[in-house]
Length: 315
Image 1 (tube, rainbow, N blue to C red):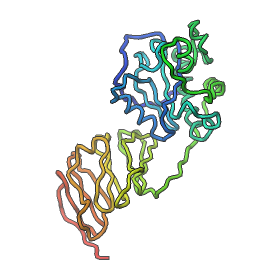
Image 2 (cartoon, one colour; image 1 turned 90 degrees about the vertical axis):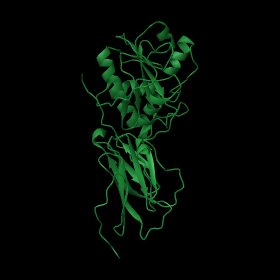
Image 3 (cartoon, rainbow, N blue to C red; image 1 turned 180 degrees about the vertical axis):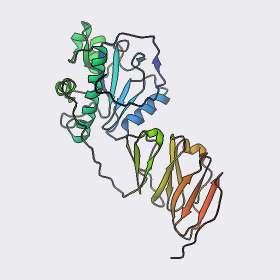
Image 4 (cartoon, helix red, strand yellow; image 1 turned 180 degrees about the horizontal axis):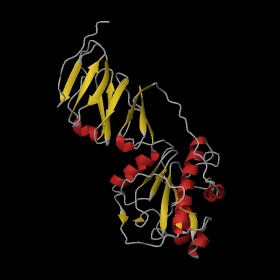
């Protein structure tokens, strides 16, 4: 298959398994979710855990794609086109104007999406052309929208990805040669203090700000403290051995757990008197304990972490 993309898989909770089906359509959606670098990962996690009976085949943001339902299975994304369609969810909102879909984030997102659509069109011999509601009723094959499906089959009222979505330009992108994805730079409110990674993230990583904000680049994001008032700035963090969570450390020794790190919580130094601020945290190999060290060399152990000794700094 030309232009192959490396796409992680996070299985959605709601879908219909099949032994194979004829795929005629690619259905474009928006997530009604902010244009964040971890949008694909967050919405994939939503599909994996939600009680709402909905799913899509792929979630796309500006730097990553996550598959949630296998192509040959039926995702629950656009009634009327579920049986023969592949649903693509994009970070953003149906209310976005053309200029909103033309900013740096959306440009990178649509370039990535177009590569995926071209790959799917090649694989399933889907025409690289737009199909409106009348075309859907006539059973034409191609690329369509959730709104067109709603208008054609009257089984829903969704109108995404909205009138501002640049469909004509998107079709041109699908037909055209692969374009390099534009690098997206985000301006943050607080200094970056550490970076998190894990072998299972395939080279992806998370930058962590002093305010607890987490910014994923090709890595899963399990949450942040960006909107939480902290008593002390974040200074470090570590990923659990499974790669399915992480803990952030405050200078006051407070620990904040996300994902499966919550299962490993064994205590913190938060609220206790310290001679000097804490500077680092590290999980044990089992993930059932961790060490915290302070600027003066003090070492605090939790869970199955063992104290072997420490230096002393009196500066």
